[in-house]
Image (cartoon, rainbow, N blue to C red; front, side, top):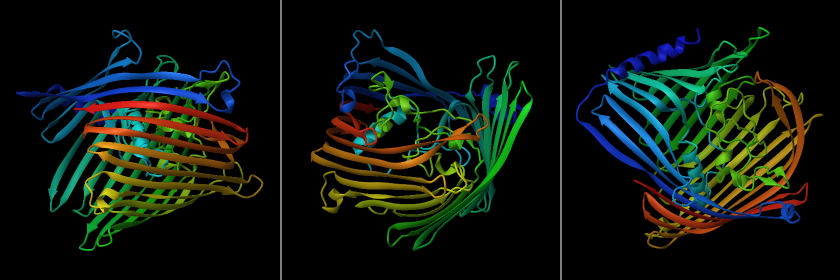
Length: 564
């Protein structure tokens, strides 16, 4: 019975693909080349007396991703990316590796669009959505460029997941500004070991009806399920069903946006050996309202959402960052695995995740305790206010956001935790303000979060992240760059430990008092919009005040990227 949705969503696409015929094929190439060299050193109190610690490292790589594209008119197309990668320090290509990085096929037949292979899947924040890390939004270009490398390597693009499967979509024009569209997909999120662990598939889709040019309604369904093998130890099914309404209107003076989404989830977990079934269900509701003042060039917004404590939506709650992963740079100190720092979040490929997890992943509460799983974070009731400049402003980009949240069910105590987040910042285009052709940008941003709870299991945790950056064009297309990040966290909290049913079964408490400062300075040469070379030096200093110890990582980073 678990195959029914998969067949419904996939059969048409697979059948039509077999009949794709066309003439006059078009062939094109594009891709990316990148070269990175790093020279790193480790210092601080924790390594001064350790003779067995690695204190220096030189590494890097050269890679070339060649994307070939084949188009047979509009009925069939194919794309494949072949990667060539050679680590720095090898000679004559002795350790060069060749692999297919990505592959997909698709086309359009009589208005029906289909795709097979590696798919970009994204729906709503409560069904399929890859949420980004909590940040100020106004970091230095030195840090954002470094993070962009990791996101490329991890297949992150916007808020989509890259998964392997099949998809199809079709739209009908009903006239009088009415329209109906359907989208469906089936992907595999985990493979069987051909014994105790089953294949895990995820099927889903969206049915959307456009009432007119201002209003539309949609129904979203996502179903994750196991395809049992003969010796499977368990069987798991998770279904998420939501509906949404969207209203957009533009007047002479304002832009109005209203969006509401609500629905429920159902989780069923069966242990084959014991015949034990566990199930639970919960619901969510989200209301967003934005009002843009054209003459002022600003957008004002209000948001309310309530996500039940047991609301489960794997493709919306999976995190792109693993706090329990060991960084690749100086991975151990004194024969102990090095814990992650904030610096690792945008410099270490090892800490990123590109898989959909059926259960809630671990997270560091002092980095983001209010929305660690994005908008779909369970057990939250959130009220939010926001302000932002619109795209009409060419001189400054600014925003501010305030969120107040509380638990729905107490975790780790009878009393409820309360959360408060305030963040904002600005990117000031000084060059535009001074009518200069030079690039002169100054950016400032901050994010403050507080978690509190009274009673016998009291909680008090605060964190602060500050960003500042400068980009100054010294001569044509040659820029001086500087950036700083300052992060601090102090207080106590409880970590919720979850079982295989995704339910909390125990708690462990901890205290934290850390400060981290990351400074970076360098230069960038922009050959074109698609080619650039930069060199910068980074210094990260992490101080654990409880243990009275400091870890310092210095790194010279040389980087070239070219796209074609």
